[in-house]
Amino acid sequence: MSIKLNFNIDAGAIAEQFNSFKLEVEQDLNKAVANLAAITDAKVKEMASQELHTSRKDFMDSLGFEEVAPGVWVISVDESGLWVEEGIDANKDMKPGLLAENFKTSKEGHRYKAIPFDYGSPPSQQTPSTQVIVSYLKQQLKKEGVPFRKIERNTDGSPKVGKLHEFDFGNPRGTRGGPGKGNTPVLKNLSIYQSVTKTGNVRRDILTFRTVSSGPGSQGKWHHPGLEAKKFLDRALDWAMKEWEEKILPEVMEKWK
Image (tube, rainbow, N blue to C red):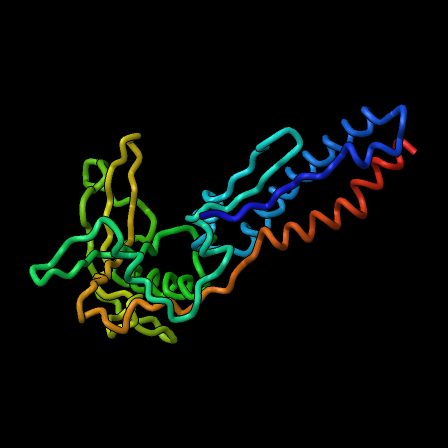
């Protein structure tokens, strides 16, 4: 399932009124439609960059832009980004989606999986509440003499690898329990890892893990608080129609008047 925004304007019908210049006008109109589609695609990305944080990359990756037929352009959001575009209902049970794949099965027959929560992502990808947690985390790590982003190295200069640290820092003031909405503090069992990538770069991860299960232990937990629909495509369409009617089409018509 996906959502599509189509640009398909009958340039030939508009150009009919120009008689001997019909072909030239139609060509200009088709170029104008292509340009409108391109700047509307850019408008969607601009709005997403300004308004999204942790979901920005997922939404950007879900966007598509292509000419599906001569003069017909489509901007689309695939299934992976629909939750941003269409929103999420409050109190939606997230367990079925989280446990749909890559799960393990307990001896009682319940599905379960460890869900990682990353606190080392750039500030631009963090929600305001996550920024509060990260600020508190930095303070606590400083007290422990542990860097937040700086790569830790051995005495010979080589990077340390593996699990380097584990801490229980509890909850920052003004925050509640962890992602499953149980009693587990947000920063309980915080772990810091370092690894060397295939390209030779050193990666540093600051993570907590929480277990989601289909069993009774997760009953009443892992319900989404709700997410307002962004409707980027609808808003971009309104913007594009205004650009077309008030600026782009009048400029083409004036040129051939």
